[in-house]
Length: 591
Image 1 (cartoon, rainbow, N blue to C red):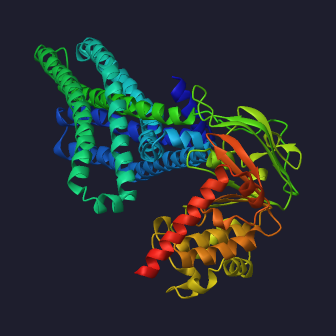
Image 2: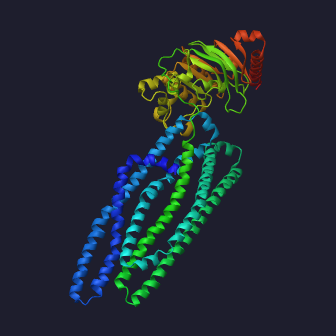
Image 3: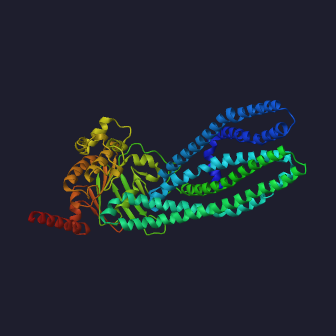
């Protein structure tokens, strides 16, 4: 009930259109209810009377003319607008749900996305939301119209013959028992089917994205078997739902077929004894279909509603995901930024019951200075930089920008002043122009081109088939690693943030690309507060401060010269890298 109540919030803006549709529906369903009465009149008052042939034809023409106006001229527009308005309402509601659900997804923290598969999220937003349309079409419209039809038809039947009506509806209690017993199980089976479909979509999404790995490791056969396991599981769940639906329909249809037999037996007996006219019997039999057709639809509606409610519960499960990172009620907008950053005894862990990833981190970066974070993998460097734009909440301590605790700043205004260039930047399908403009969608053409030039990307872009309007494919697959990185840097140039975060932005590139990108990064870092996660220590010897991290703690801190003189972790790692570089050069020369 709570799930339907939540859904009704999306129906409320369209209540006037719902009412209009219901009124039109009443007319649409009411018109066929006149047909048995027309049959009764035709049989009793025309065909079985002693009127002359001419009088019978005249009366028949008269009644058919009236019926034609009703069934053709009136019913056509009624049928059209009933269908159109019903579809319009459901389409608009589904649009609103997906729109607000996407807005909700954007507010969820990175922790949520790390714990949930992309394919399953997509399945809930697309498939499950689509299934909920039956709550409106069926639950809020068709059911009421079928109840209206059923009520009016029963009213006419009681008017025609009370005893025969009770005979006709004698099996209705069995309907109620069957529905109650069958649909509780159906809801569970439907929810299981939806989950298994989400598993298939999730697996498919991951494998399509990682198809180069599948092919390079010749995993096609293995991967096909893994997909078959999930696909077979979905087939099993789907067949269980099908089996239960088939059982439901067979029981309901069997119960339905009993009623005409009872009516024919008892009604035929009454006609034979002269207690019932043939016209009344024919009309009554016509109304019999008018009560059991909506009754069948009501049973089918119960099936659809059960499935829709199960899907709605999955949508609401996603909707009820809490926001790990939220703006405080008193949070302020960050307008002008100098870029003074301070970590004040910060502790952080991803889960409440896990070990701390960062332990007592304490350092400061004056405005316009550059700090490099170095150390072995797993030291906590990437976790540290993810705290500055407040992708996660810290457990203890505080992080300040220009003396303001970032938890007292709105997330959006905070992130507007932070630019990030990562090792594997994400580009979106579309053109190069569209991807660069993500840095500032309102920027001018001139500003966009100047950003590309600053990132050393303008020249290679002009050599592409369509220049800035070249389609780059999903995740920029049509560009090289160096080209993707330069587009990502141009995006940050266009954003023009005061605080810059570079996470191993050149570690996966060849020397030529690294040289071009390093040049553009040096331009980008000028006069900005910059934090660099460095893989190659030779690229950060010029920075103002180097922080060596190990196991989530700051072990060493100082300039390149100071750390080399300490003869500690940094000096050892630096010398090892220099030795490896010299060996690589010697191998190349020998070759």
